[in-house]
Image 1: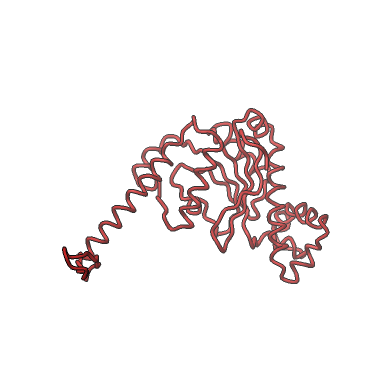
Image 2: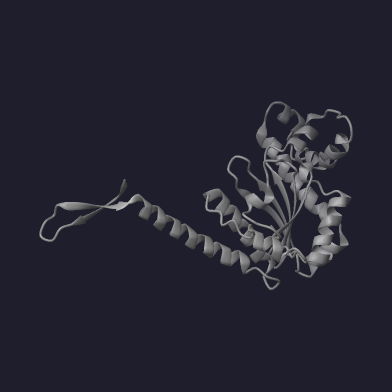
Length: 260
């Protein structure tokens, strides 16, 4: 079995199909893929302390694009990388994301060992403990981007919109999302009622407002605020779409660019 390539004989318009072995075609395809992988890898590995905040964010979003297209480069995922960073980590990005099992940060952004400092908690809420972890990432590790990453159809947001009382410590978690609900209500949308009626658009509106609110909570940190003012840090609010796999940036603060 092989792949056909049509050619023409001299003085005859009748094409002749030359059949190449399938193994040759597979080999050529693999070579092309390896070439593309090396291109992505060299770009990822070129990030350094000299990279701008915007370059770091762009690299992260390019990783998400590779994830969506099915062309992941799998950077920094071999054992040599494990040994390389065993003594010290130097990630360029810190991400406060949801604990939802459908949003594995390193996979979504096509990253590897030591590339991303990750804090995960249901509802991607910026509690004092989570902010302290982000402060460590900024002050000690020198990350250039701090991202709050929410996602569509968030269960924590949906729980907060149910208006129910929950057992154990769950209530303390959903209380952090009430501000986002109030902000959506102020837009003239009855969020509680809409979500009870199955309106997923309103649910995702609250998800976005929650990301923006948690960004504001992070900015209460003097460490984070000082880094932003010095243009050493870019705060990013983004939402991951569970259906498409796309990460959409909805707000930025700091860096060298204008705020969105």
